[in-house]
Image 1 (tube, rainbow, N blue to C red):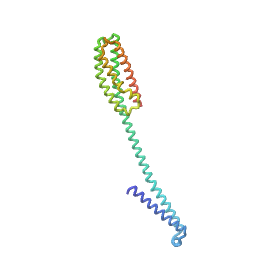
Image 2: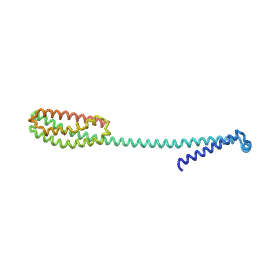
Image 3: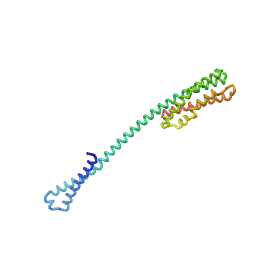
Image 4: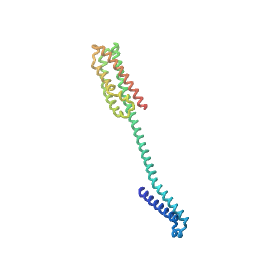
Length: 228
């Protein structure tokens, strides 16, 4: 039998008990001689009051029992919802940390290549080794190919967690300028003829140094994000 049907039965039975009890008490009060002669008036009053009390208890029980059960059901649903939310947050944290580690590793590789390039350009300017600009161009071309792949991975990795990252500054640092300027510098090394434009070569070295500092700052933001 369903809870709704049981509740209806409780209400009907309780109402009947109240009705009978009330009728018995009223009968004694108005002094129905036929009824009082055939039964003990005190017993009738006690029985009537008991019936009324039983009926009221039944009505109260039938009213509050579904509410209590409904309240417990709501609590169970909310508890399950909180557990699901906690599991989702846990999975999001794992996903975010995984991609942050990948991004950090790739940025470190880019920085390492740029540091080598900056050193090679600086030594060329200072008339140290390498004396042949082709050596610088060779490493720049090799770095360009590697950085191009890494930059592509970094962009895709950030896209996976952009909604999970707390730091807006980190997202801004990952925009096109920071990611693709490394490639631009490599292309500049491949394009330039240093013997004809020493001033451009000096500016190129400064740009390499400044960009390395920007990527270092990006690493700091990545570490802070992982701590969050």
